[in-house]
Each structure stands twice: as C-alpha cells, then as structure tokens.
Length: 199
Image (cartoon, rainbow, N blue to C red; front, side, top):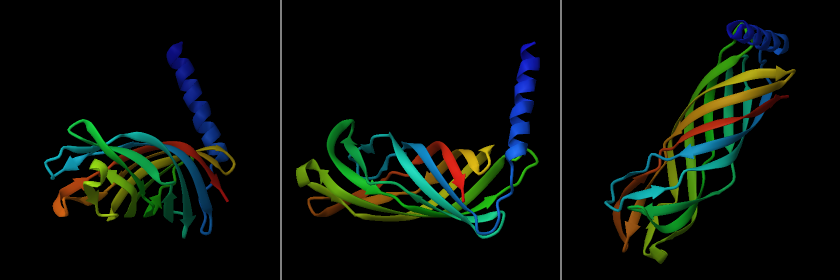
C-alpha cells in the first residue's frame, strides 16, 4: 500500500512538472532567489591554522538565455561578515563580496525537470579586515574559477524550484608584520535552494 501511494505521488509530481514544463527560449531571463549554505575548505599554508566560520547567506542570480540550452548566469549577494580563527581561537573578522559569472548548459527532459551544469569565474573583494588588532592583513582581491551543477523543477507556469551546488575557488595572501606569511584558501562549497521566475 505504501509503495502504491509513493508511486502515485511520484506520478502526480511528474505529471504536474510535464503540465507546467516549457523549454527555455533565447532571450528568456530566469531570476532566482536562494538560501545558500557556505562550507569553507579552510586550507592554510601560513602555519596559523586559519579558518573562517560556515554560514547561511542570501543569494540572487540572473540567467540570460542565448539559446534554449545555453545561458550566462550572474550570481550576487551582499557583503558577508565572517569570523576568522587561528587554531580555533577567534582573531578577528572580515567581509567578502563574491560575485560570480558562469556559462551554463541546460538539459531538456521529458518530465520537464531541467538539470544544468556551469563553469565560470569568481571575483571576491575583501573589506573591513580586522585581524590580530591590525597585526595581520590580507590581499583584498581574489580571482578564481567556479563550477556548478543544479536543477530547476517546474512548480507552475514560469515558476521553478531550484537546487544547486557550487564550488568556488577563493584564496588570499596573508601578511603579518609586513611580511607575507602564506596563502589562505577558502574554496567553499555552496549548497543552495530557492525559487526561480522566468521572464
């Protein structure tokens, strides 16, 4: 009985997705709002055992379709404040703003569910850096790659439920006493869920 109910629910979901499914078209704009969890890799070559805290943050992105399958996505958020720790002890804070631009390929399926993959570039600007009461600082700019995989699931006409995973490469040089101490790689994995609207 439980298996029959699950099979029926799955069939209804897929049928609903097919009902609302429409292939993306050249010129379409898909705007998504997500809640994203940032999980930092925290790779440190300074010997200080540097880490930043993981956190959940808001994100907005805009995907413009050049063809039904090919789109460019710009990911935006607001400056995020992070606590920086050394061997588990907080030594200060910083803010970072990490806009990301990717080129995506979207797949069309019979069910109407639309998976996609993407790759591109991230630029991160660090600001409001306060480490060891000014005894340490970092390079304020970071350029790196970005990879993503996600899926848009139709809920209604022009409305989608989105799930996405991104890997973003962010690193900065660390300076203490005016000398370069090493490199701190944040390189976070970001897992997001949200809604998308097609215009």
